[in-house]
Length: 162
Figure (tube, one colour):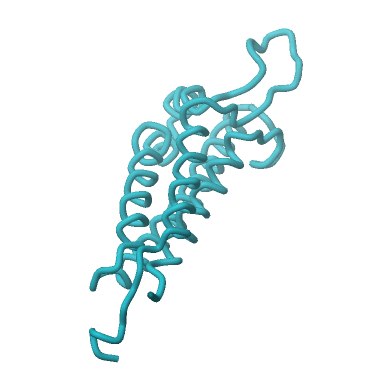
């Protein structure tokens, strides 16, 4: 196709998915509980938030989890959001950015799971819970995973045909 016949329009649906995914991840990082806690006499509060998990990762010497809960999650969501939005603008680089945005969203999903798994296994080695990574998971973890997945899908959507 020649450039005059290959017209593209702004990818409104893709941008909407990117914005929704970003909102879910940011809400999970800022406000939501990632793990609920069973009622025990020595447990304060009712669950673990993102900052609580960062403190646990630092104490348990879990390097990937420490990086994820310190700066990596934020870098992934900001990077995936920026690339995802730009990937939905009709430019020559849109196709490459769609792939990069998808990979950034997938990296967010994988990074979230890997950080949680490393933190879980560090807690287990320190005499903590013997349950799996998903045991007692709460809305914060699921919103982070779903948000990164929506970021990936929104980036792939790309600009539409005019």
